[in-house]
Picture 1 (spheres, one colour):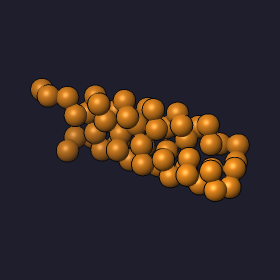
Picture 2 (cartoon, helix red, strand yellow):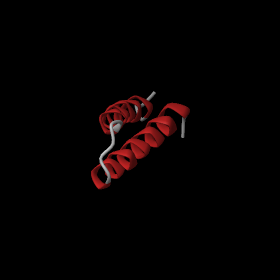
Picture 3 (tube, one colour):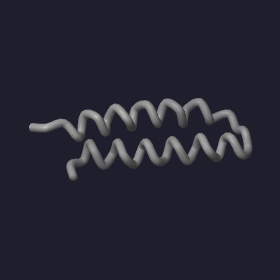
Picture 4 (cartoon, helix red, strand yellow):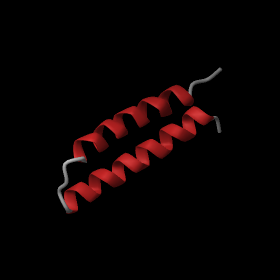
Length: 51
């Protein structure tokens, strides 16, 4: 597994966890977690590309 794919997966999971935490107890950083998910998904797409 390459570093881009691993970073994308980690960022996506962290963003999802942050968003779920924001649903349970609203906080001001919840919008940033959505950005983290979008960037993470992009990194996963880039990292999983065939060479």
